[in-house]
Length: 125
Length: 408
Figure 1 (cartoon, rainbow over the protein chains, first blue to last red):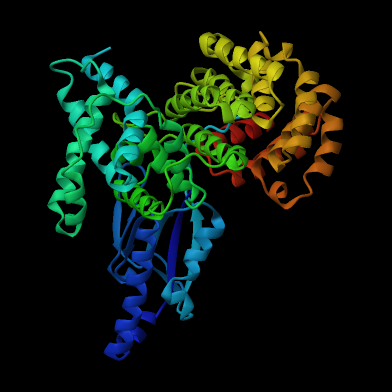
Figure 2 (cartoon, rainbow over the protein chains, first blue to last red):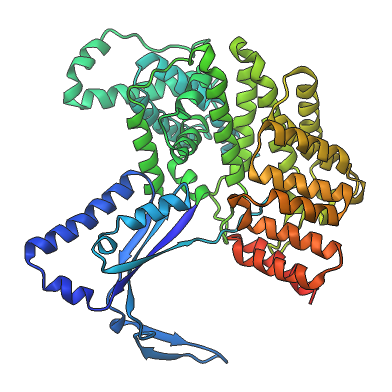
């Protein structure tokens, strides 16, 4: 079962991270590297990326054959989508367990959203 | 069939036996499995031209053995082993012994996680490549490669022998569970099926046949062969409805609306014969009961002709023998077909108090169906819509929303 783990980072968390000492920054990055390595090693990792700030986003709106492009952010919210993992795991419980290991949620700097991926399966009676 | 198709068929049939022979000979599952993968790829490349060798198993063992030894010789850390190998004779013809069962037990070893058991079984026993498995399970090749290599590392200390007799039924149950999971994975399809996507349902049937042959020829497994036959029958009977299960646009067709002319009669005949034989000669078990239920459906000429009281009786046995939330829910469905939707609603209220069923989309879909039956279209519609929100299956959501719209 695949789950998308979305990392909704508090606004300002990146600036705060930039103000850390190099040692603290290295620790934070090492925690991510460990999580990545663990997920790859367990065969649960499907994909994952960090996203640039939503101020760099382009929003596309459509309808009636024409499209309007505008600069982001898409919406003013207290949090920003900062990155994601796509994992293939045995259960929702396992996906939530992975979400709890994300360094930013442990530091209280992000809320993690765990969403099941929809499938094209045909359930049997 | 094309030459490549013939070769693939031969390869898949002999792969577990060839790998079993190599592991038996060299004692290193991890390296033997890699070498056999290379030998299988070489065979797929080379055989179509001169034709399949007279003894394909011996060919594979010989080529894989050479690769294994070349690999060991290239690795300086294994110099000592190389000395030991210098006196080893050529493997010669394939051994009479068939180690496929040992191989299956190893791949479904209790120390492995279920996803690892599935990946390793498909590769080592099924003879599929990592890419084929990855495409079929819709995950990247690197993910499957990692699952397989992690599984092989975990198996380093495991022995390549049949478990002791007392542990056999439990280990066989684990193998059966893996085969059945591979089968149900086969129902998962990507939006655009890729050309090299192996049909996992066919793959599971292939493994089921292998397992039944082994259960029948291994004295220690005589007592369990009824359940193995039940598993194969269940897969064949479910598989027989495949062409009727979806509309050309990908929509879902429920059992009672399926065009029964599209059901595969050959698969039904084989499945019914297997389960009938098992029920009359072996101790009863959950796979046989589920296959028997599928057989009652298969033998009904129309949906209305279905013998629901027999199905209800089988579900009563199944709930007693292998209770699970979904089994209880299915029993309620059968009960409503016998005693009517009002009785179904009452039974559902009693059955669906457990957590696993309260928020399950099927519980709400079933309640919607019952409400429709007792003439409460407003309540039914709300339940269909709730069920549609709760399912993760796109075709099923579409189907549930169509049902809801019909009541508008």
